[in-house]
Image 1 (spheres, helix red, strand yellow):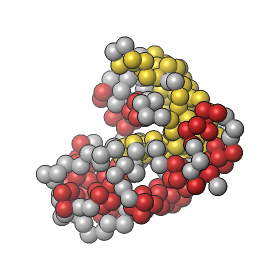
Image 2: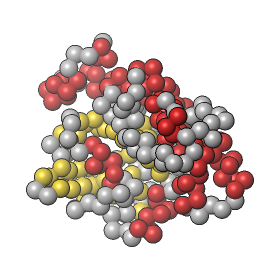
Image 3: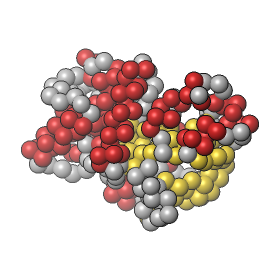
Length: 251
């Protein structure tokens, strides 16, 4: 893991409030090339808010976000395009268009980015579906997919433009343990086979210990702790112990 090199994403002093409610109070965090960083924290701690700042979906009130040396906090929407094409986002609910079939859903971000070659679009769609182990499902509609299949199609859409980094917002929400484990295997395959960088906001602790290479814990609007999954398991920090409880993943 390239911890000695410059991070792909560098966050410094990130502050964000909603009305009178401060959510992020000066977050400092690095994301390194090729790692799978899991972001943990209690409900309402600001994990998803933090994630949405990385591709510029939210703008900081203060602080900076640098992506591969480019400070993005004050970029205009059109200037964010090249940055966003380097990232894929798997939203919590999948955010598929129910009126479009699978192929049309996957083609949507390609066409939005300016791709017009229909044969290339079809090839990219087929490639992404192969990666998520759903070959030949181009004509299916989202309402006809199971929950696990919908999540995999949403992941295919997040990676169809071959991003360097994929952002996952609660990828295990609504999945049974079998499908959650299947998503974890896909995430591992992406990192191991394609070298993709991942940032995963999750509450599924078993998955953290299966797939994360590093963990950041968010509390009181700040990064309270960072370390490896093994260091998390062995930590005596009272805040972390209270969060982890006595689940079987600690054995």
